[in-house]
Length: 109
Length: 125
Image 1: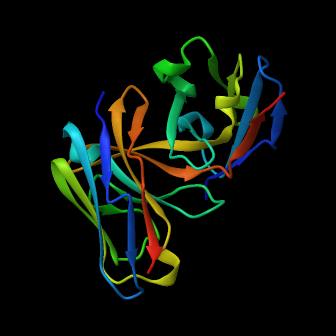
Image 2 (image 1 turned 90 degrees about the horizontal axis):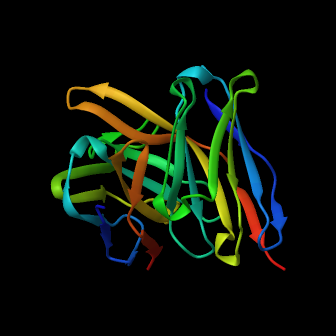
Image 3 (image 1 turned 60 degrees about the vertical axis):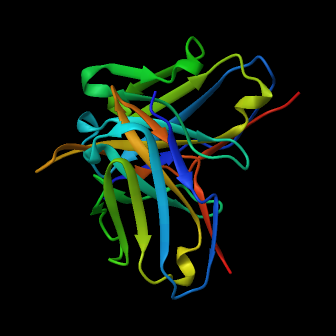
């Protein structure tokens, strides 16, 4: 089973700054199978990025995804107050199954 | 606009079972695939299982083997997840999500693009 490890565990930044979140896989992951989600307290996760770099419908262009193989990155170019949340990477493992990273909490500094 | 609406919160005794429903609207149910994901208090997301109703295909995480049943009812556009032999470790918010497949230049893409509101299941004596 492929394990996804996200870093850092917590990222403290100020509005307007750039955020870089990492997701590292224990084995190579097909880029088309890698997604990122945002979750705010008390809410369901929201799909941000699929296929490693494609923004989901309605997602602002300050969110971007990149990477391949075992290293993937979610970048938020200029943080807005509503962007402070927990972010998860996810990979499709075939036959309807998925694994998630443990999450990165993005908090206001 | 596809929407998923889940059943309400449940409080269960250890050893009992819980069945959570997920009703879809705004799309063609027969073309959907569903995923079930749970989140224990203060923890991350954990995939529980999934179903493709029109193919009658089900899969679930090995740790739930023998305890979980995932079904669907096309006339009511509803998917279900039933978890048995509950323990306190099953206390969590359970989400259903549409397991979507796209086709593009890179081949097939997979992600969960629409989510239900979540169902809180509390297991307590």
